[in-house]
Image (cartoon, rainbow, N blue to C red; front, side, top):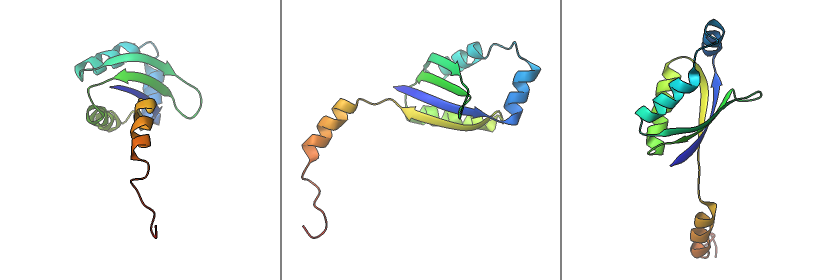
Length: 107
């Protein structure tokens, strides 16, 4: 499964960057995703609402949620949103087949 991850660093996380600006975070994150049975597809550091945007392949949303908990526990991550990549055409097809199944109250 493919996921898009949006994350914000805490002060502790940004302090770590300033103390070790040459640390290879790409290698660390890539290795971490391999350990969970996944693959880091892309990693970007951004200006704006989020500090990090990553695209990751992982076995399941449960695995990604567990990873999120462990990363927040480190104290370096303030917020992490995990967006699951979906096949909207397949979902729309299923939705089209369900039209008419639900009846509004009074109908």
